[in-house]
Image 1 (cartoon, rainbow, N blue to C red):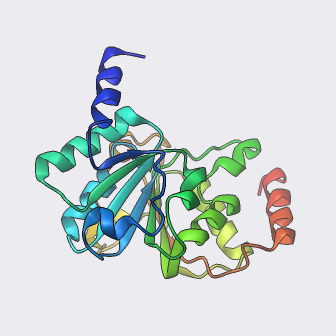
Image 2: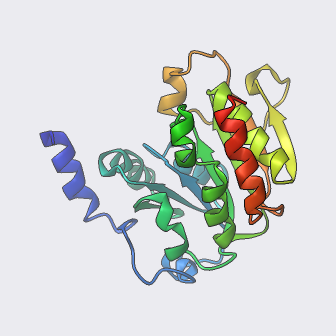
Length: 233
């Protein structure tokens, strides 16, 4: 590990708003933030651009970025200190442990911004909009809570639309090119480091906003999704 990464790993251990594999937090986030504002998560947050951007836009909300990469979290956490943002926190952890950090219905919304699309069919379970992850999110999401996916990957966008359709999830908004729209909401104008890289080389940014009140526990539909994947659908 490089010296810069080592310095950042050491630094975040002293940041009061960065928690590594925190214990005893479900139901305690209002105490942590000293307010009762709703909590929004950014998963696989990287450098936390969306966590910071949302906190700037909507001060009457709490925003938590989750990622395993401590050196990346440092960037967002340090920015929050510079700007004096008191409604920002970060959790260093794998996303799989999410239900151990939040109580039932404790999370208002979840943002997934430019995640690794895990393009191989054999790695589909690692896609952050795969039903196995959506089931985890539903354990902590409040009624009416929504999932926001922003990605430059047409494959992840198409896959997620298939999941939404197959599991009868409510779809509130879909765009295969958000910046071609005449008007977009302020939060969709937040740009991330990975968005600027245009790794997918699609020259488009896709967006989905959907709920989790469908048939996510129907394993027969999960089998149908597997068949679609290995058929190349």
